[in-house]
Image (tube, rainbow, N blue to C red):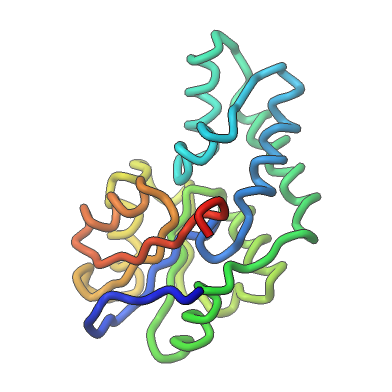
Length: 196
């Protein structure tokens, strides 16, 4: 299955990481399950995908509110990250997106715009030998307003020195597509694993 691009010439490609470049969402879900089991906290798979693109810390705060829990946010973030790192050897790229990365590399600059931590993004891209393809990484700690706010995409465009209207965004979540649209950028929807 190929991933058609919208018409036009683009001066930069901005990629979400998890579920877009790397087929990591199933692994992230396993890591979440393991971390949350320690606090007996349910996180249904449908909700996990619905909340795709939200920073890890925000998800823990929301789960605490939803379940009347007091999970320590920093501890759960660390545990979830640790479990994800253990699962990295199973990681694969999303083939349709990888084809565009190979095709456009060195023709247009690339940025990653992710709701994940820099450690997680770097580990994922490094595992697949793709880290050196990206000129800019904008991760959860680099901005204050998460997707669907356009802040992260606008920051990436600024760091690349490319006007927002000349950027093409690759995203797998509704929040990400909304953020790209709010930034004035064209976008490509990457099907989630269950949609492929």
